[in-house]
Image (tube, rainbow, N blue to C red; front, side, top):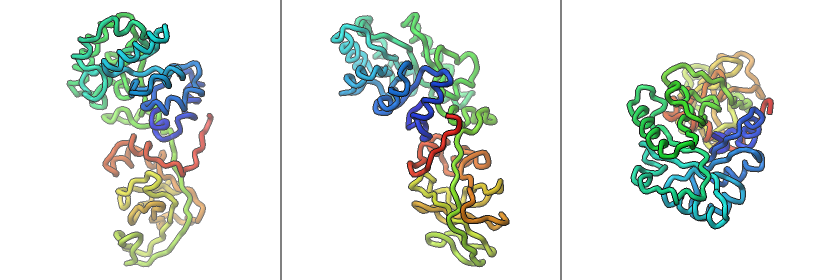
Length: 326
């Protein structure tokens, strides 16, 4: 999964690394994302999960991008496009088994006929699980059974079932093609257990200013934080314009020299303030870890009342990105 610019980390660079590692199946959400990545993946399948929307067909064909067809109308339009060109066009067939979001409904699947697929080269049939991150959710087995019944209507066509979390539900949820997303980027696909994935991204920021404040002095907008002791405040050039959520003020920490230091006061558009009193020798120019091994993305997400996906995909373009080993 390379949607949302590789979960906010750089789709082109990550595509190249995965391709070098042997991956030949890639997914995006939007067509524009797939068009951007296609030149870097000349011999791979590139699939657009949003399907073949109005006006998309010419671009899909031109760039050899496979849509995940999610409505009967899309299937018919894609088949007609193949007939007009005298060849079968590649596609995935997305079957809805309970998400009620995208994918052919049971009624549409029942109405699907062989002639609707006469000029479509089906690469995979796929579905998406509602509660894969909850191994005890009864809907997992219900969806699996529905998918197996639906996929049986397409003998010989490979199947794609598991997202990141479903990969860890066991062999019963294995299929011909898994679709890992969050796990690739270090987000825990098993929230019921310790994260089996290694951290992928580290976000660091330099201390740009240091200020000593007396007990009783306030810091930041509206002085929502007031020093209870003589305090050394470090200012970092990160703010909500960079995707560092405003709600993290007074909740999150950053790490300096392996020591966790609390973010104090409000998060502003471009700055945060951090109590570094307990780090002797803290100096302007020192690097602080905002996300990384000492400040896991899941911990930050929990403090913000969201998930790791939103934390990573919110990261702004002002950050200078450095890719190791790519």
